[in-house]
Image (cartoon, rainbow, N blue to C red):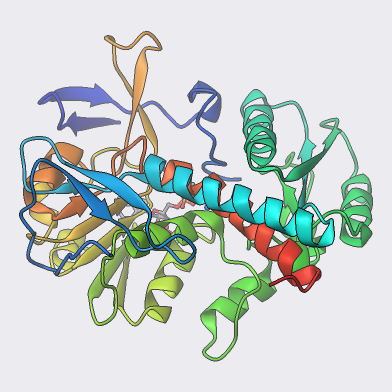
Amino acid sequence: MVFSDCSSATTARFLPFNRSRLPADSAVNIGRVVGPLQWRLPNPVSLQARSTLAVHSWSSPSLVINATMGTGTSAKVIDGKAVAKQIRDEITAEVSRMKDAIGIVPGLAVILVGDRKDSATYVHNKKKACESVGIKSFEVRLPEDSSKQEVHNHIAGFNEDPSVHGILVQLPLPSHMNEQSVLNAVSIEKDVDGFHPLNIGRLAMRGREPLFVPCTPKGCIELLHRYGINIKGKRAVVIGRSNIVGMPAALLLQREDATISIVHSRTPNPEDITRQADIIISAVGQPNMVRENWIKPGAVIIDVGINPVEDAKSPRGYRLVGDVCYEEACKVASAVTPVPGGVGPMTIAMLLSNTLSSAKRLHNFK
Ligand code: NDP
């Protein structure tokens, strides 16, 4: 498949998705497997090229991050790397407060079945991220030909283990295993990925609260919050309707009182719908699909897509781009997430945050 490469005005070949191609520091579980800045949508605000902006935060209201302008344009770069670092620092402080107060350290258990290198890398990165904030990690590695029963036994063990507060089954599982049945076996109280149908069901229902929200969509909303971007009453379009990103992202935006449309592969003329949006979240997996003429002036763009495209100039032979043509979006949007460095770092930060919340809830620690 060949897409126009909007950064170089040449064409780039989309490499069929293969997570093992991604750099080892791509910490996400991609594919199959989470004084406010005054933005008034839809009008872009003019700020100096590099200004220091106070950012909304629940626990550290004085935190400040730098906002840079997108390439040659009016759009601000939403810096997921910087926000994720803030969140990890906050988690580190909370983990230490909890340990000092009640002697409990949050614990995350990861189950990896099979020998996919990419999955092993993701598990390794999650372990490293846990260590960096003081969360204890537990790991089980099972051979490719393990039985479903073996996986269920480990899940049951972690469900019962009081030192484990979050359980994550690394996806994809080998083809002989039923992913749904394995995920359903994780206790809803330790479902830090937020994929359990009960958690998704609660997310969808008014008056019900999920115990956990899937990490990537939660990270998207957190970015909007931390940049002080108003969601209430705005028109939002989510491109993509997967169980792990698009659908929960739409449910979250709806909970925030946005008016939502969902665009998917069967939507005719998607650009007619996205052009009406104050906020676009794109989770498709098609490089540079969202072009300038898809975007309403002043809109905020959250690009979840991570797509490797051929790049002879890169030592790896490829580079990563989003679903959104970044340079074009920068010309018309008021704010945009880069790829990499936007949503990706937020996914792991939200996993750590979910694990901490779980430990607090299970030990009734405020
Ligand atoms: P899925 O393949 O599960 O879902 C893709 C969605 O996009 C589907 O709903 C599909 O529609 C829709 N779609 C496909 N083609 C088009 C099109 N031409 N126009 C409109 N909609 C289309 O992918 P995921 O949700 O798992 O991931 C999406 C992207 O996000 C990927 O690039 C992935 O790598 C990335 N990702 C990034 C993460 C991060 O941390 N940054 C985490 C997870 C994913 P339909 O339902 O009709 O098939």
